[in-house]
Length: 289
Image: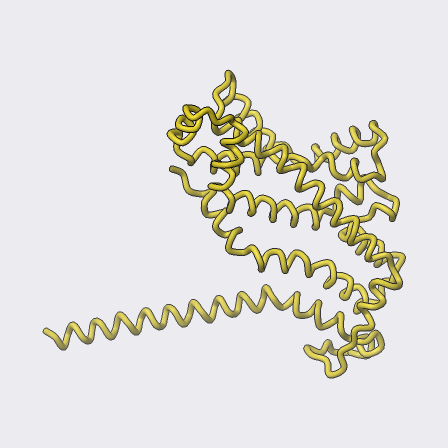
Protein backbone atom coordinates (compact mmCIF):
# COMPACT_ATOMS: atom_id res chain seq x y z
CA UNK A 1 0.00 0.00 0.00
CA UNK A 2 2.76 2.40 0.99
CA UNK A 3 4.82 1.32 -2.03
CA UNK A 4 1.95 2.09 -4.44
CA UNK A 5 1.45 5.49 -2.79
CA UNK A 6 5.16 6.30 -3.15
CA UNK A 7 5.10 5.27 -6.81
CA UNK A 8 2.04 7.44 -7.51
CA UNK A 9 3.63 10.37 -5.66
CA UNK A 10 6.88 10.03 -7.63
CA UNK A 11 4.94 9.76 -10.88
CA UNK A 12 2.94 12.90 -10.03
CA UNK A 13 6.12 14.81 -9.16
CA UNK A 14 7.74 13.66 -12.39
CA UNK A 15 4.74 14.84 -14.41
CA UNK A 16 4.77 18.22 -12.65
CA UNK A 17 8.50 18.57 -13.26
CA UNK A 18 8.05 17.67 -16.93
CA UNK A 19 5.21 20.18 -17.37
CA UNK A 20 7.23 22.85 -15.56
CA UNK A 21 10.28 22.19 -17.73
CA UNK A 22 8.27 22.35 -20.94
CA UNK A 23 6.58 25.55 -19.75
CA UNK A 24 9.90 27.22 -18.97
CA UNK A 25 11.38 26.14 -22.30
CA UNK A 26 8.41 27.57 -24.22
CA UNK A 27 8.44 30.79 -22.18
CA UNK A 28 12.19 31.17 -22.72
CA UNK A 29 11.77 30.64 -26.45
CA UNK A 30 8.94 33.17 -26.56
CA UNK A 31 10.97 35.70 -24.53
CA UNK A 32 13.89 35.35 -26.95
CA UNK A 33 11.54 35.90 -29.89
CA UNK A 34 10.13 39.04 -28.27
CA UNK A 35 13.49 40.46 -27.16
CA UNK A 36 15.43 39.66 -30.33
CA UNK A 37 14.27 42.76 -32.28
CA UNK A 38 15.47 44.98 -29.42
CA UNK A 39 18.81 43.18 -29.37
CA UNK A 40 19.13 43.57 -33.13
CA UNK A 41 18.25 47.25 -32.91
CA UNK A 42 20.89 47.85 -30.21
CA UNK A 43 23.47 45.76 -32.05
CA UNK A 44 22.95 47.58 -35.34
CA UNK A 45 23.20 50.95 -33.60
CA UNK A 46 26.77 50.22 -32.44
CA UNK A 47 28.02 48.94 -35.77
CA UNK A 48 30.08 51.22 -37.97
CA UNK A 49 28.54 52.35 -41.24
CA UNK A 50 31.21 50.71 -43.37
CA UNK A 51 31.28 47.48 -41.39
CA UNK A 52 27.48 47.20 -41.54
CA UNK A 53 27.44 47.64 -45.32
CA UNK A 54 30.30 45.15 -45.70
CA UNK A 55 28.26 42.36 -44.11
CA UNK A 56 26.92 40.07 -46.80
CA UNK A 57 25.54 37.83 -44.06
CA UNK A 58 24.24 39.73 -41.00
CA UNK A 59 26.46 39.17 -37.95
CA UNK A 60 24.84 38.53 -34.59
CA UNK A 61 27.63 40.32 -32.71
CA UNK A 62 30.31 42.90 -33.33
CA UNK A 63 33.89 43.01 -32.14
CA UNK A 64 34.30 46.76 -32.76
CA UNK A 65 31.31 48.61 -31.28
CA UNK A 66 31.16 52.36 -31.81
CA UNK A 67 29.08 55.26 -30.50
CA UNK A 68 29.55 57.29 -33.67
CA UNK A 69 25.97 56.63 -34.75
CA UNK A 70 24.62 58.16 -31.52
CA UNK A 71 26.69 61.27 -32.10
CA UNK A 72 25.28 61.47 -35.63
CA UNK A 73 21.74 61.02 -34.33
CA UNK A 74 22.00 64.29 -32.40
CA UNK A 75 24.34 66.24 -34.67
CA UNK A 76 23.06 65.56 -38.19
CA UNK A 77 19.33 65.79 -37.47
CA UNK A 78 17.29 67.78 -34.89
CA UNK A 79 16.60 64.69 -32.79
CA UNK A 80 16.85 66.65 -29.54
CA UNK A 81 14.08 69.00 -30.72
CA UNK A 82 11.86 66.07 -31.70
CA UNK A 83 12.55 64.55 -28.30
CA UNK A 84 11.65 67.77 -26.48
CA UNK A 85 8.47 68.17 -28.55
CA UNK A 86 7.40 64.66 -27.56
CA UNK A 87 8.10 65.35 -23.89
CA UNK A 88 5.98 68.53 -23.96
CA UNK A 89 3.18 66.83 -25.90
CA UNK A 90 3.17 63.77 -23.65
CA UNK A 91 3.30 65.59 -20.31
CA UNK A 92 0.71 68.24 -21.15
CA UNK A 93 -1.69 65.80 -22.83
CA UNK A 94 -1.50 63.29 -19.97
CA UNK A 95 -1.98 65.98 -17.31
CA UNK A 96 -4.99 67.50 -19.07
CA UNK A 97 -6.51 64.07 -19.65
CA UNK A 98 -6.29 63.22 -15.94
CA UNK A 99 -7.99 66.53 -15.09
CA UNK A 100 -10.84 65.52 -17.41
CA UNK A 101 -11.30 61.81 -16.76
CA UNK A 102 -10.95 61.70 -12.95
CA UNK A 103 -13.96 63.99 -12.23
CA UNK A 104 -15.90 62.28 -15.04
CA UNK A 105 -15.27 58.82 -13.59
CA UNK A 106 -16.18 60.08 -10.12
CA UNK A 107 -19.46 61.53 -11.39
CA UNK A 108 -20.46 58.32 -13.16
CA UNK A 109 -19.43 56.13 -10.21
CA UNK A 110 -20.68 58.08 -7.18
CA UNK A 111 -22.96 61.00 -7.99
CA UNK A 112 -26.67 60.52 -8.51
CA UNK A 113 -28.20 62.57 -11.31
CA UNK A 114 -30.96 62.06 -13.84
CA UNK A 115 -29.89 60.19 -16.95
CA UNK A 116 -26.53 59.12 -15.53
CA UNK A 117 -26.70 55.54 -16.81
CA UNK A 118 -27.98 56.69 -20.21
CA UNK A 119 -25.16 59.20 -20.59
CA UNK A 120 -22.60 56.60 -19.56
CA UNK A 121 -24.03 54.13 -22.09
CA UNK A 122 -23.74 56.77 -24.80
CA UNK A 123 -20.12 57.32 -23.75
CA UNK A 124 -19.42 53.61 -24.12
CA UNK A 125 -21.14 53.63 -27.50
CA UNK A 126 -18.53 56.12 -28.68
CA UNK A 127 -15.97 53.34 -28.43
CA UNK A 128 -17.75 51.64 -31.35
CA UNK A 129 -16.92 54.51 -33.73
CA UNK A 130 -13.86 53.74 -35.90
CA UNK A 131 -10.84 55.89 -35.13
CA UNK A 132 -10.57 56.89 -38.78
CA UNK A 133 -13.89 58.73 -38.58
CA UNK A 134 -12.81 60.52 -35.40
CA UNK A 135 -9.52 61.56 -37.01
CA UNK A 136 -11.34 63.07 -39.99
CA UNK A 137 -13.68 65.04 -37.71
CA UNK A 138 -10.82 66.20 -35.49
CA UNK A 139 -8.78 67.25 -38.51
CA UNK A 140 -11.61 69.35 -39.89
CA UNK A 141 -12.16 70.97 -36.48
CA UNK A 142 -8.50 71.73 -35.82
CA UNK A 143 -8.03 73.07 -39.35
CA UNK A 144 -11.12 75.24 -39.00
CA UNK A 145 -9.75 76.70 -35.78
CA UNK A 146 -6.41 77.44 -37.43
CA UNK A 147 -4.50 75.20 -35.03
CA UNK A 148 -2.47 73.16 -37.51
CA UNK A 149 1.26 73.17 -36.80
CA UNK A 150 0.77 74.05 -33.13
CA UNK A 151 0.89 72.26 -29.80
CA UNK A 152 -2.81 72.97 -29.05
CA UNK A 153 -3.69 71.28 -32.34
CA UNK A 154 -1.64 68.26 -31.35
CA UNK A 155 -2.93 68.09 -27.78
CA UNK A 156 -6.64 68.95 -27.78
CA UNK A 157 -7.99 65.81 -29.56
CA UNK A 158 -6.21 63.59 -27.03
CA UNK A 159 -7.26 65.12 -23.70
CA UNK A 160 -10.02 62.61 -23.04
CA UNK A 161 -10.57 58.87 -23.39
CA UNK A 162 -13.81 56.95 -22.99
CA UNK A 163 -11.91 53.76 -22.21
CA UNK A 164 -9.91 55.34 -19.37
CA UNK A 165 -13.09 56.92 -17.95
CA UNK A 166 -14.71 53.48 -18.01
CA UNK A 167 -11.69 51.79 -16.40
CA UNK A 168 -11.44 54.38 -13.62
CA UNK A 169 -15.19 54.46 -13.08
CA UNK A 170 -15.22 50.68 -12.51
CA UNK A 171 -12.50 51.08 -9.89
CA UNK A 172 -14.30 53.95 -8.14
CA UNK A 173 -17.50 51.90 -8.11
CA UNK A 174 -15.76 49.14 -6.10
CA UNK A 175 -15.26 51.48 -3.13
CA UNK A 176 -18.04 50.80 -0.57
CA UNK A 177 -20.90 53.28 -0.50
CA UNK A 178 -20.61 53.40 3.30
CA UNK A 179 -17.38 55.38 3.01
CA UNK A 180 -19.08 58.03 0.92
CA UNK A 181 -22.06 58.21 3.29
CA UNK A 182 -19.79 58.55 6.31
CA UNK A 183 -17.79 61.25 4.59
CA UNK A 184 -20.93 63.23 3.78
CA UNK A 185 -22.10 62.93 7.39
CA UNK A 186 -18.77 64.43 8.48
CA UNK A 187 -19.32 67.32 6.08
CA UNK A 188 -16.66 66.27 3.57
CA UNK A 189 -17.07 67.81 0.14
CA UNK A 190 -17.15 65.67 -2.98
CA UNK A 191 -13.82 67.11 -4.12
CA UNK A 192 -12.12 66.31 -0.82
CA UNK A 193 -13.62 62.81 -0.79
CA UNK A 194 -12.35 62.25 -4.34
CA UNK A 195 -8.82 63.48 -3.66
CA UNK A 196 -8.34 62.08 -0.15
CA UNK A 197 -10.24 58.81 -0.26
CA UNK A 198 -11.00 57.54 -3.75
CA UNK A 199 -7.81 58.50 -5.55
CA UNK A 200 -5.44 57.06 -2.90
CA UNK A 201 -7.41 53.80 -2.87
CA UNK A 202 -7.29 53.56 -6.67
CA UNK A 203 -3.68 54.76 -6.99
CA UNK A 204 -2.48 51.62 -8.87
CA UNK A 205 -5.13 52.08 -11.54
CA UNK A 206 -4.43 55.81 -11.84
CA UNK A 207 -0.70 55.13 -12.24
CA UNK A 208 -1.50 52.49 -14.85
CA UNK A 209 -3.66 54.94 -16.82
CA UNK A 210 -0.94 57.58 -16.67
CA UNK A 211 1.70 55.13 -17.94
CA UNK A 212 -0.53 53.81 -20.72
CA UNK A 213 -1.35 57.35 -21.81
CA UNK A 214 2.33 58.31 -21.79
CA UNK A 215 3.12 55.33 -24.01
CA UNK A 216 0.20 56.18 -26.27
CA UNK A 217 1.31 59.79 -26.66
CA UNK A 218 4.97 58.91 -27.13
CA UNK A 219 4.12 56.43 -29.90
CA UNK A 220 1.48 58.62 -31.53
CA UNK A 221 2.13 58.78 -35.26
CA UNK A 222 -0.94 59.18 -37.49
CA UNK A 223 -2.45 62.30 -35.90
CA UNK A 224 0.85 64.23 -35.47
CA UNK A 225 1.85 63.46 -39.06
CA UNK A 226 -1.58 64.56 -40.29
CA UNK A 227 -1.85 67.84 -38.39
CA UNK A 228 1.78 68.99 -38.63
CA UNK A 229 4.02 69.52 -41.64
CA UNK A 230 6.39 71.94 -39.92
CA UNK A 231 9.52 70.14 -38.60
CA UNK A 232 9.49 72.50 -35.60
CA UNK A 233 6.48 70.52 -34.26
CA UNK A 234 7.50 67.01 -35.25
CA UNK A 235 7.40 64.35 -32.54
CA UNK A 236 9.91 61.53 -32.30
CA UNK A 237 7.58 59.10 -34.07
CA UNK A 238 7.21 61.38 -37.07
CA UNK A 239 10.78 62.54 -36.77
CA UNK A 240 12.01 59.03 -37.57
CA UNK A 241 10.38 59.23 -41.00
CA UNK A 242 11.84 62.69 -41.51
CA UNK A 243 15.25 61.33 -40.50
CA UNK A 244 14.88 58.53 -43.03
CA UNK A 245 13.88 60.85 -45.86
CA UNK A 246 15.95 63.97 -45.26
CA UNK A 247 18.47 63.11 -42.55
CA UNK A 248 20.69 60.06 -42.78
CA UNK A 249 19.23 58.76 -45.98
CA UNK A 250 17.74 55.36 -46.65
CA UNK A 251 21.07 53.55 -46.57
CA UNK A 252 22.43 54.65 -43.18
CA UNK A 253 20.60 52.04 -41.14
CA UNK A 254 23.00 52.07 -38.12
CA UNK A 255 22.43 55.79 -37.54
CA UNK A 256 18.67 55.31 -37.79
CA UNK A 257 18.83 52.47 -35.28
CA UNK A 258 20.78 54.69 -32.90
CA UNK A 259 17.98 57.28 -33.10
CA UNK A 260 15.39 54.57 -32.47
CA UNK A 261 17.30 53.33 -29.42
CA UNK A 262 17.39 56.85 -27.97
CA UNK A 263 13.66 57.22 -28.55
CA UNK A 264 12.81 53.80 -27.08
CA UNK A 265 14.83 54.07 -23.86
CA UNK A 266 12.36 56.32 -21.94
CA UNK A 267 9.39 54.01 -22.52
CA UNK A 268 11.34 50.86 -21.68
CA UNK A 269 12.67 52.44 -18.48
CA UNK A 270 9.19 53.71 -17.55
CA UNK A 271 7.65 50.28 -17.92
CA UNK A 272 10.42 48.49 -16.04
CA UNK A 273 10.17 50.94 -13.14
CA UNK A 274 6.38 50.80 -12.83
CA UNK A 275 5.63 47.30 -14.14
CA UNK A 276 4.28 46.11 -10.78
CA UNK A 277 1.92 49.09 -10.60
CA UNK A 278 0.74 48.42 -14.14
CA UNK A 279 -0.02 44.77 -13.38
CA UNK A 280 -1.79 45.69 -10.13
CA UNK A 281 -3.87 48.37 -11.80
CA UNK A 282 -4.95 46.16 -14.70
CA UNK A 283 -5.83 43.25 -12.39
CA UNK A 284 -7.78 45.56 -10.09
CA UNK A 285 -9.76 46.86 -13.06
CA UNK A 286 -10.92 43.33 -13.80
CA UNK A 287 -12.23 42.63 -10.27
CA UNK A 288 -15.77 43.58 -9.39
CA UNK A 289 -17.06 43.73 -5.86
